[in-house]
Image (cartoon, rainbow, N blue to C red; front, side):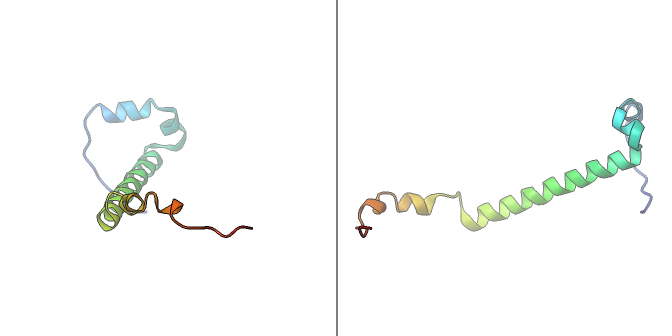
Length: 77
């Protein structure tokens, strides 16, 4: 692991220290988990944006094909 120095508001460490999970696991572990969750949510948001860009708003193809299911004839079993 690599040590990282960050600046946070004065009241945040006291608030962290009051939390049960922080007391059990320590600040560093909780902050690592939060940073990982943040990065994962950002990756998901980028992937969703790429999906929307590539595929548009979704159901345009199915909307264009609405009603065509009744046009065909299906073999009798």
